[in-house]
Image 1: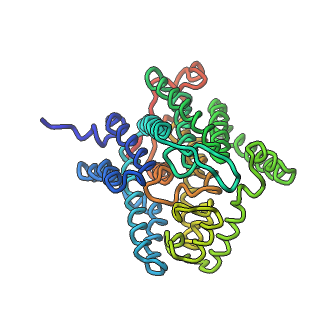
Image 2 (image 1 turned 90 degrees about the vertical axis):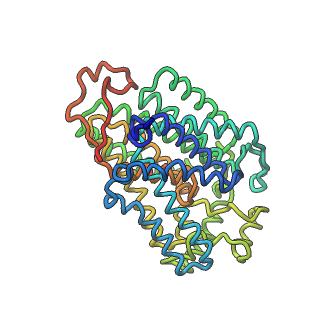
Length: 430
């Protein structure tokens, strides 16, 4: 009995396999530190074999995707000047293979399958945290918060944010109905509870902003592409002006105060100062990928002690750009930031230019979420992390051609406010 390759590698035809693969990948990203190497091997087993089934379609035209490997390749080069070469070598290889798996997923899955897998995956991750999680005391702000089965409330909050966003997008962007609408509702409620229990101000704020962005973008879908661009530029300029005015008028302190935070962001501003001072010592190339937070080095040991990190592991500068500059210097920051900005700008351009592009609509929300969080977390910097997986999946979709109808589907105005046009699906070329 022969099994058709399409059920594994053809976008749209492989919905069952893709949903399971994304679900298991999300679980591995969340708890690989608990389950160890077998979980990582499972992650590789989900994506690497697809290359052997049909390498032409799974890999595609890789010359279009070389820019996506730029930062990963630079982390590998940092072995040659790393202060801890074995650590950098292992971490950089892991990061490169992680990018590869994300791009295999990008080539073989459509946006609906990703969304369904993310809904199930985040639901299982959060349910596991509720069953086996715990509350932890934060000595910095003197509060207890639910961290689930993670070591940080911010990681629990991130999965909760993703759960809410994908549940929202499934119904209001992709127009899911029946069983998936119910599943999205359950996952959304579970995510909302975990988000509240985690008391992660970062996750709450970013979730609110991204959902608000998606609702706002829905409104401009009723305009022509030319009108959308004009309105978007106008709103963007006004938004920047209001944001700058809010900073000078103290709006930031009011928002932070509403979440029980002060202007130091619970010590993060001090941590950022320390990171910038460290980065200036090796400004261009850094100390090597993942070669700073090493036990036995005086500066990390001092910061671990000051921030009450008894495990002396799993800590960082809470800023993607500062962390990247410390490890890979200004060159690494430019490479990573260029990919992130390309993802955001690229999907904005597709969304505004195409009559209807649900793929870019949904992925723009993910890219925006990662961009906002990059100023306070390091979601896209490490291997086997859901943030970096979604980062390269989102950016990688820009390397694929998308054919969109030249004209709006008939009777588009008669559709439900949040439903996609009838009988319309985006098609991607090879």
